[in-house]
Image 1 (cartoon, rainbow, N blue to C red):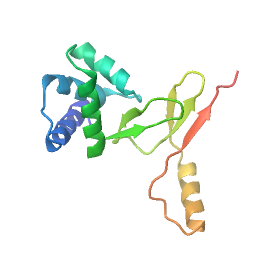
Image 2: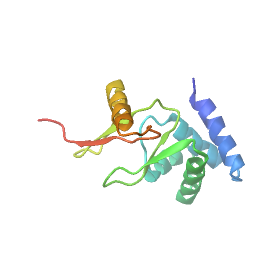
Image 3: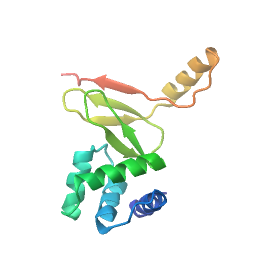
Length: 141
């Protein structure tokens, strides 16, 4: 099981391999990312990290997030009509519902959808390597 501590250590290793210095500000930022259960954008990551260390600059957030994304330990999502959002890659395979009214992002997993996608690809002579499913929805009244 990946705890926030072990995720933070994984992030530290990724930053070291990218040649970035490990500062107290970056550690605070990495802890924010390791603990995030949602899909924060850079502004939200910056806000949360500044609560732990007010010296964290937005430039540090951009550089750090970019390095972690390149290392493959966080994933960028660009949901229609919104700024890029990030999540850990250690989460189980899942898809997203984006609430068009509130902007809320709801994760869901469906074995049936996974199976159906594989069957369709196979029927057309393909193997699924990667897919992304985003449903843009409004809650019923």
